[in-house]
Image (cartoon, rainbow, N blue to C red; front, side, top):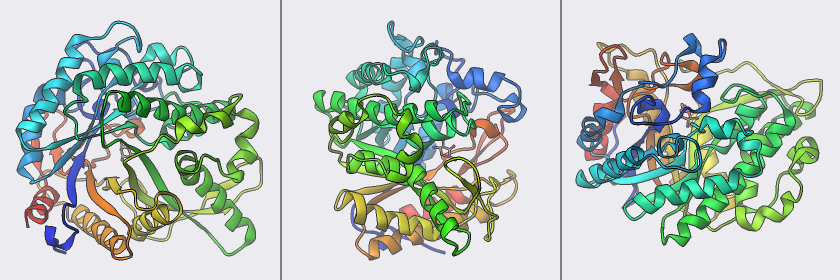
Length: 437
Ligand code: FCB
């Protein structure tokens, strides 16, 4: 597979993505405790109880990392700022060293000709706010607005784009209903409140950034294509519920000012009072939407309380995560999102990639094939008229893959977690060739 820039529309942007807790090293620079630190310290939550104290030590090695991004020929770098790094207690006294770090980082990108694409929240909630209920607490939108103001007063004049929250589904459902991510709750009421507060916090944050005069603001959602495991009406309804919770709830809130009936059937009684009145804030106009896409799920009906579904066995080759490789889902999401929700609004693939048991001495051919087939899916969507404006590979380098620790390697660059040495993989060189072509 070969690509060149000319195979994509003029001005199409290519980039790589990372996030703060996954790479920076949270024990450095005066950052406060986060709910991922306490989640990881609780046995059984994270593989080998691994955490982000050192991670890739990007906090000290950021210049080398930016050099590697620039050397690939990337146009844009999607990074995130850590709330606990700039506000160790979540509110109150800022940590000057943390703000200085992001200031230097943004200047470092600009100096290398990279467009900084900032995300304000990629999951490391300050522990002090988690202690007060975190995303369940109705004060979260206020706290998040204040945090937005602090960070963007400092770097908002130089970032190319900004998004408030990475992947509302993971922040709320995965973390409060399925218990897989911090804070590890399995509680329908907590999930309902978190899902709504995440969207309301998003809207408040957009308003703060508009007031600061910022432009090019967006949202980043993760989507999973859901298909019924059989033609039975029960399985079809189960796949629709899965799709509604995972995908259409957030799109519906952001772009239609309504939540899907299939979700309200379960979560309705648990949403915070007056939730219907929050849509004018949630629907603050955006300049783009980012889609993170990795896989598809086959879904079947399961007897029992709402949401009454289960995942069915997959049929296609899997990545190291056990995720089915299904590039058509990316094409179909781009087309469906534009058709049903966003119209002419520019769409970006803000994350896409695969984990693979890479070794530093072996070419990661499987990743090159994965990235190539998904870039073809993007081309397929563009061919039907979907306004796709850019593509970011996840991830720049191997990093802390949350509850799966350091074992799942998503990087274009290999990281030796003993020496922290970076070694570009074959996929890094392939993308560099495509992006320069
Ligand atoms: C996404 C996350 C990212 C990483 C990839 C594999 O859901 O945004 O941090 O974990 O999955």
